[in-house]
Image 1 (cartoon, protein in one colour):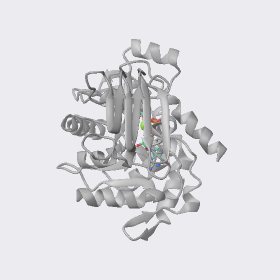
Image 2: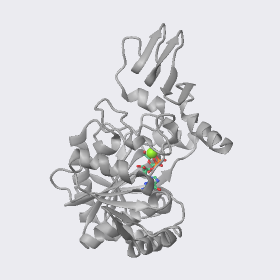
Image 3: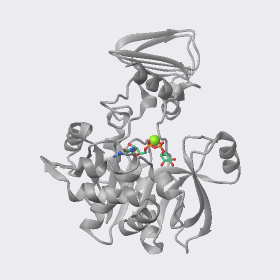
Image 4: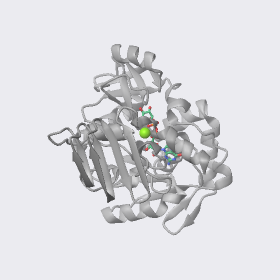
Length: 350
Ligand code: GDD
Ligand code: MG
């Protein structure tokens, strides 16, 4: 049995104004299914072969997490972070909990904000990665075939085959390279890191204790002094605050020599921006994605979405217009990634 650890504490500012500090993108219904990516993530790992999921999230999101789990009829351990310390600390907590259930536990860490249309292929790949993780004592990555030199991802250079498991060793892991470097990586056959990790819980603890001991110690302390609150497990604030703010990619994956990679077959998108959302959605005859109370004239290749307020566009191409009851975003598709800077500016002005 694989122990799923869903990390759902990120902020997702590039999908503002639908994704908010109080309700980040992983909990918002952005998909045609009407479900959130968090719900889809939980559903992918609540079938056969998976233990009770652990959800690690910020305390602010406890009720939305509990509600969405209840809506699916899935029971999980919900662990609450008093503050955001990035993914290394959240994953350390997950690994410690899994190891507490079973010393030989194999964890599957899942990002809560990804779109994976081929759920069955994904779970099959995860089970294959889990077998390789246990058999070869590796932290397994799911390597996606790149579609371009994105600077938003980790890059993986596959090395030698790991036996006849279908997996490979990792020659190099490079988190978010610059454009030029990313271009050479794509040309050299590197893979994108999907942001899901499969590993023996004990091995992750060993690698954390070698490369990021403060993260592991803070996570351990925060768990030891954690308190039960209703159905939630609240991590101790003082102990957790000692965890350096660092992602698992920089903290462990760039340094470890125990990584492995499976070349994946499933379609994948980390719906990281409105443009990325646009890419994965079905278009109408004019190449538009129109959602909600919207109407357009002589407009092409555009993403127009409104929850409530009638939103109209005339004579524009390749734009994003997103309306919510209290905010409107207008940008070109090309520059939609810069919404992150916009949100930072809004915060500074507050
Ligand atoms: N619980 C918790 N607490 N979860 C967190 C925190 C935190 O403080 N910070 C981030 N997460 C969760 C997010 O909700 C998301 O599911 C996942 O960790 C990854 O965080 P992101 O902030 O979205 O990372 P990224 O997209 O920049 O980069 C990662 O994902 C890429 C693929 O989407 C890296 O792993 C890259 O290497 C990878 O290519
Ligand atoms: Mg992400």
